[in-house]
Each structure stands twice: as C-alpha cells, then as structure tokens.
Length: 531
Image (cartoon, rainbow, N blue to C red; front, side, top):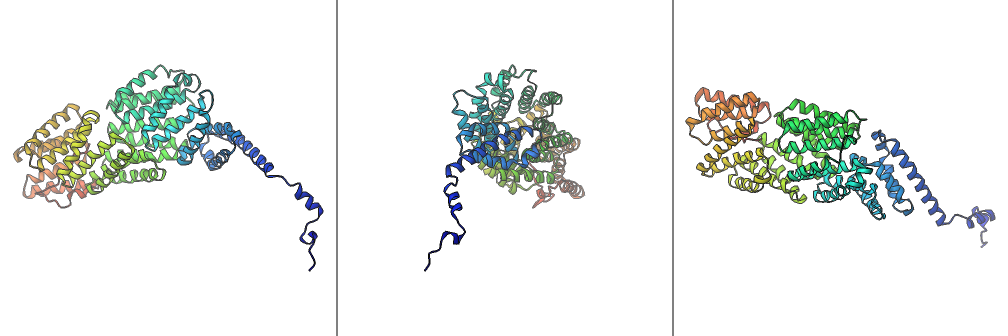
C-alpha cells in the first residue's frame, strides 16, 4: 500500500509553514482581552450618551450585561467595569434584571472596597444595592447598607449630594415602615442643613421625606404641602422622570388618605406616566397596586381586584417580596369588603408567611389582625379574637388609630358572639367615643353600626338611622347597605322587605352580594367596619 503524501489531502509546504507560525493561545487571549477593554470604553460612552433615552438604552441592556460578565475575567479592566456600572445607575433595576444586576453590583463593590481611599463610586454602588435589598424585602440589610452611606455625609456633600439624598430617602422609608417616627424626624432635622437650595434635587427629596413622615402621622394637609413644594422645585429643573414619578405617586397616596379619590386616580396615572418615561416599567406597573387601594376606597371592588392582581403578577415574576406583601394585603381587604372572607383569609395567610420570612414585625402583627377580621367574618369568633388580641400587643404602641378602631370593633363582634355581652357593649361605647375624637366619618359610621348591635332593639333604630344618614352623605354604599340590612332585622312585613331589597341592591351595585349568602331579612349579615 502506497503511503499518501500530504499533497493528497490538500496541504503543501506553504500550508505547513503557516501552521507552524499559527497564533498561540496566549495571542488569542490577549486579542480577546483587548477587545473586551475596547468594548467597555464603547459601552461607557454609549450609556453616558443615552442617559436621557432609557428605552433605547434598555434595547441594548442585555448586551451590556453580557459584556460586563465577560469583563469579570480580566482584572486589568475592572476599573472600566465599575465606571460602566456607575453610569448605568439604577436603570437595570427598572428593567427588572434584579438577579444579574445584584451579582454585578456585589462583584464591583468588592473592587471598589479594595481601593486605598473610600470612593464616591463605592458609595453610589452601595446605594444601588441598598435600593435592591429594600425592593426584595431585605430591610435589615438595606438599613445596614444605607447607614454606611449616611455615615459618609461629609464626603458626599462635596462630591455627590444626590447619592446622599437617595440614601436618606430610602432610610426614611425603612424607619417609617417600622413606625420609628421619632428617629425619622431626627434624621430629617439633621438633613435640613445638608440639602440647601443650592442642591435643589436633594432639597426636593428632603421635602418628600417630610411628606412621608407627616402622612404616617396622619397630618395629610402638611404632607400634601410638602410634596407640592418638592414638585415646585422639580418642575423648575430639567426633567427627572424618576423623581417626578416618585413625587406624584406619593401625592396620589395622600389624596387617597384624604378620600379625594378622583384626584388620587389622576395623580397616580401621572406618576405611572413619568415612570414609563423613565423606562421604569416595574414601578409604573406596581402603581396598579396603589390604584387598587384607591378603587377599594371608591368601593369599585372589581376594578380594585384587577389592578392589584396585575401588580401581584409582576411582583411575583421579579421576586419583589416587599411590594408583593403590601399588595396581598390590599387584595385580601378587597375580598373581605366583597364578603369573600375565605379568599381574604388565603391572602392574609400568605401575607403573614412573608412577613415572618422577611422579619417585618409591623406587618407580622398587622397580618395577624387581618386574619382576625377574616376569621370573624367566617364566624370563627374564638380564633378571630385570639388573632385580634395578638395584634393588639403591638398596635397599642405602633398601630394607627384607624387600625386600632377596626380591631376594636371586630373584637366587639367576637365578644358578643362568645356570650361576653357586657364587655362587648362597653368596648363598643368606647370605640364610638374614640371615633368622634379623631373625627373620621367612616369610623363614626362603623362605630354607630357596631354599638347598634350591642344595645336593646328599641335603641337600635336611632343609632342605625344616624349611621345611615352619614353613610348617604359620604356616599359609602357598603355602609349604607349594612344599615338597611340591620334595619330590616328590627322591622317586619312590607317595611322589612323594602329595607332588605335596598341593601341587596346596593351590595349588587358594588359587587359585594356574597355578604348575603346564607342570610335572611330576619337574620342579616354583620358587615365588618373596614377602615
């Protein structure tokens, strides 16, 4: 057999020479390293040029992420990598790329932490990480990181005051969520001299912080004025859609607190518009949860359910556990108002589970109270009372006045059904006094209904008529329906049937007919006082 020569397979001496001189592995490693370095320069330039065009930047977001992942292999380009991340700011979080974004942040924080001097870049990346921790429900970690930033106030005031302002804004959110209002006020007092009119955007953040605190203190007019002051500042500056969205979102929530529902819807829609303009589709869609609260207040329960379910779907996809926990409570409250207590209990069970996992004590206790409401609506009075009393341990110190009234009125129902009528009537009278003291019309209506159930029949009509008149003035169809149904119980014949029909019609109008399941005019449902 003849041995084939190299020419037979297409190789000649020239080809053999070229193979011998082929580039080495080291050559290609150097080539790709240089290529990654050059692409990082291009990426930084691209991100900086498109800061005001978030949608276009998002189109190439995954490519930038892929490049940054490649750059992790080349220590010589770490500083360029950090520069790109700092330039991206919080945009990847807006896109919902939370897992990959956090991994890159932590990698680059290790780089910036190794520098001999603390850098502004390191603090900026810490701020991004803290914001992400808060969004995913890691409050303790977010607080720890934010405190690190606030401790560097002297450096940031001279170099990057907005990072300091954003960090304070987040820290206030944490303190207020934990009802640490005195600490929040102390930080705002300290920061008043930090954010002078010469730093207008930071000053706007400070006014927003004041508004958040005043809202938690139920000083709604003060809160509204603070947010309007922030908007006045922002509207005189080049547009920052993200900050404008945050301000309008907060203003919309305050309108909801004041029961100015049309204004709340309009303002929240403005907030969604600004977030969309900023390319922040995540927050724009989560505003659906806030709109759900407004629709709940308007007793448009079907709209509320649709809005909150949209927000929940996005939060579940992103792993936004903190937001998910809030929206689960809103969905549960919506079901409870509709008379679907079993669905409400499922939501509150999930809320309690998440609050326990996230170590959120305030929500943990509130979730127990919410379970108490649902269990009472399901006629599980002993278990419901236990849950309500458990919440009471915490709400005496940290709860809102309205929340405590709601808790108390539901305990009245439980006590009465557990044959503790004397305690129930005494507590019902106390609730009415407290409701008048705070001057909340919804609370007064609910307290009148509550007391009417604890007094002899001959005294009920006057209390229910007073509650009915107030409910009609307030245009609260749920309260009005509850009054008609209770009036039906203490009448007979044609009058009883007329009252029952009125209540039934109103419940149907607002999608709450489930309250009537299993009940009759002589034995009507007790619709909980939900505030």
